Image (tube, rainbow, N blue to C red; front, side, top):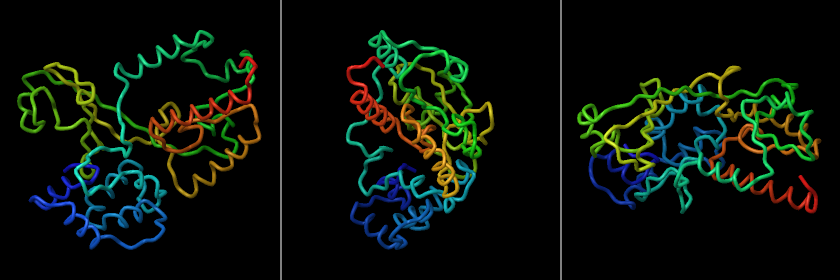
Length: 294
């Protein structure tokens, strides 16, 4: 079924054609009246009721976060749009796009236009922080790590990826499922909310538009976070919010350090939100250090 939930989803659910008016009336009859949803379960049942919540949200959330939706902040599931028209895009913004030549080329050009920037890879900042002269430090890594976990570690969820490639002969067998030749699945991302161990399969060729008879899919498995793994998702619960506030208050006492991004502010952000945060911080620092070399 189509997801995020929209009129196409409702028609697939019913097994027949429908209208926005019928869908809106159906939702009105199913919604649970909750004026101020306090968690992810409440925010979804207040929008679509229990039936669609059970079908699309409950098990996926349990699998992804290893927590019941009622134990997660309302923002986790509340960020997913519910529509009664046929708009099947994941985000709400009017204009949505990827860099034409990918993020790699975009960052290459940003660095080429910034001759004063030195890029050092595969380096722990703690090994060089005393050797690099600076007026202001911008931290984008985990804020609890920056403060040596003095209040205890913040919990995260990690991911594990499994790649698989297919040639033309294998894809011929998938043509009816994908809906067009040369593809494995009908959309760039297909979610698996219930029985499978993975949460979704991504076939990026849908976004890049590459013309090739072969393709590669990526299965995404939720994973427990541990040292040495990537910290992908902060886990938003009342307990973790209280712990993060302790680190944020400690960070606020450092006037020459800025904490920017998902890990440094312990919050889930989309790419456009992170870019907006970075630009806002740049403007603030430019005003502060105007006329000085930073």
